[in-house]
Length: 126
Image 1 (cartoon, one colour):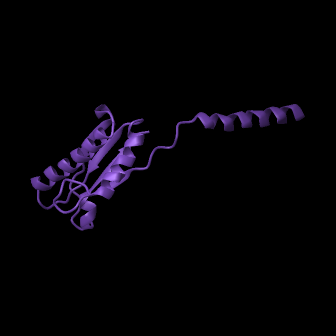
Image 2: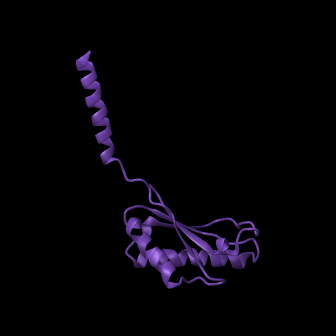
Image 3: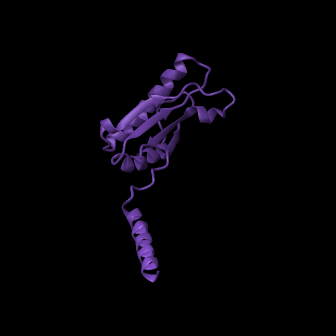
């Protein structure tokens, strides 16, 4: 009985140690906001993209751009330009182009805060 208990404790200890080699938890998404009808970022937002470059060198990223329902093709084009700008900044920071996917989200509801419609998310794949 005592031997069985010790064996069980040893196996539980080994199982706990096995988690040390587990892949790290996925990186949280990074979000940057653009001004008005602009497709360029200010210095603080560029710093967020630069910080995102480090984990992006190790794992694939998806750049998601958002836009509002008003403006039709203008907003879609602007959202795409914003996502491409973030992708270009990541490439300049040394992220291989094959790790970056650019996508735009469907138009968001007009009742969302205007700033939310000018965001780009950098999402990391596990």
